[in-house]
Amino acid sequence: MSSFLSNEQLRNIATEFGTPVYVYNANRITEQFQQLKQAFNSDKVSFFYACKALTNISILKHIKSIGCKVDCSSINEAKLAIHAGFPSTDILYTSNGIAFDEIEEAVALGININIDSLSNLEKFGKKYGHSYPVGIRLRPNIMAGGNLKISTGHDSSKFGIPIEQLNDIVRIMQQYQIHIAGLHVHTGSEIKDVAVFMKVTDVFFELVPHFPELQFLDLGGGFKVPYQDGEEGTDIQLLAKVIFAFEQKIEQTYQLGFPVWFEPGKYLVS
Ligand SMILES: Cc1ncc(COP(=O)(O)O)c(C=O)c1O
Image (cartoon, rainbow, N blue to C red):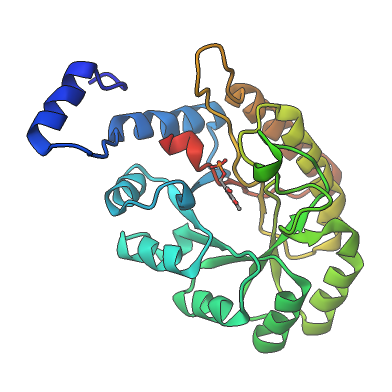
């Protein structure tokens, strides 16, 4: 089956089901995922579908069936992901400005968590100490994304712990012996320019020595798909090369290797 639905197919669907009707194309989602897998061609790179892009339960089940993991931005999305059958280890919860009890719920579910504020990091440390590995979402002060409303990494953004608070992060980590397992940055949506991701890897490169127990580096989502004729999407092949070079640099400099995580949303379903 072609990855696009023809007008005739759509007319047939409308006749059978009536309108309005939502039509999703599972083959197209699979193709988009395969494009990412083939470009990166590495077991060390994982993709977590940012399900805020579309939380339809059948889509979530399809995403799981093709071997993709899932990124959630609320505790209810995380519960939905469990309902769809994802194992807790394949669920990532990147929180934003939430009350601590949601983080407690996430811990009870056993899912991966990125914490985005110093206050929640401190509460986390007091309650869990070293017992539960956790990621931190950072605000790197990088302007990126299709427009200001979908730019989340710049120096006035509310998303993530500002990078200039690194000393506070490290102090809290040491005080409570928190196992900081991951660094997370999501600078925005509809990022065409691969150089943005290079800026993020530069930030990670500098941060690695501050976090002795790191287990993953999470570059968020934001891959752009062309919406109109003549528009260009993110060059995924180039991005894969950039990430490969980054991994080599980390290996040569620190003799370390980290799995790299991405959280594509719209790239898979729009
Ligand atoms: C933390 C996080 N990750 C991933 C995404 C997915 O972005 P996109 O759909 O542009 O890939 C978003 C979108 O806002 C996000 O906030």
